[in-house]
Length: 110
Image (cartoon, rainbow, N blue to C red):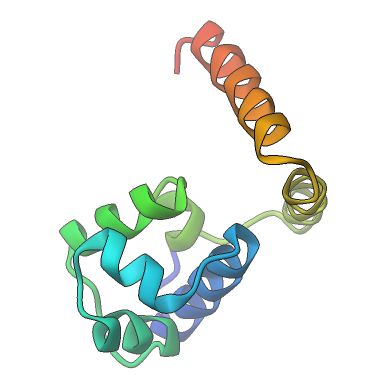
């Protein structure tokens, strides 16, 4: 189900950014948007253009549906658990895990 509430979208971006271990300034710089603009997006006080959504998603390594749709509660909890475990790994192990996931997804034709 699509989310039309800017505050919910902002909260999801906040959680995803924290999970990635990034600051607002780092996301803003990587997405080529102003720090203030990104902060306002996380607070839910502004609406984003589609190109801004795509830039932020690229920086956070997510798809737009991850911030624009509601998650199934059990899937969301499992996903959060796996991201927590992945973030506890060394950078080399993280890269290996992400490479394996990429290969798996490619095998599905995605």
